[in-house]
View (cartoon, helix red, strand yellow):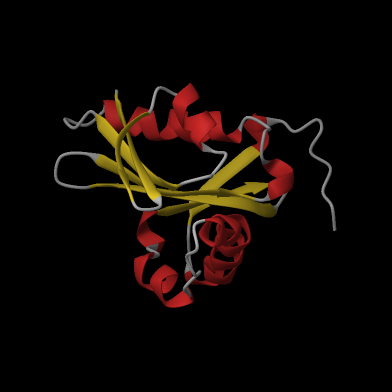
Length: 152
């Protein structure tokens, strides 16, 4: 079922903690969004790796009109914040949710003593343009991955 998003109101987006019942949604959404980039880089999507790295306590579910539309997760490492995931249903991409998520993350980072944010992206992922728009810059390329950073 296609959901109309033309007149989406960002102030109507609800954010909540991720719970066990959200796992299949998060897994399916991640696979749908990311598997093409894995294939592009001659890598194989591995459910076991997703299972091991997925962390309920660090993930936030985004809902709109009572339906899950995406999730994101970030956490503090030793000397930087790391964005693990930002995943949105395709029909909600390009609606300003990325900006909403970055504002949330940057708000938390500004309240901490650590002012660096990092993320990793696969080569060919069009989201790199969004990250560059928000002043992330490439600090390392390693095989099929690009490591990006931003100072807040």
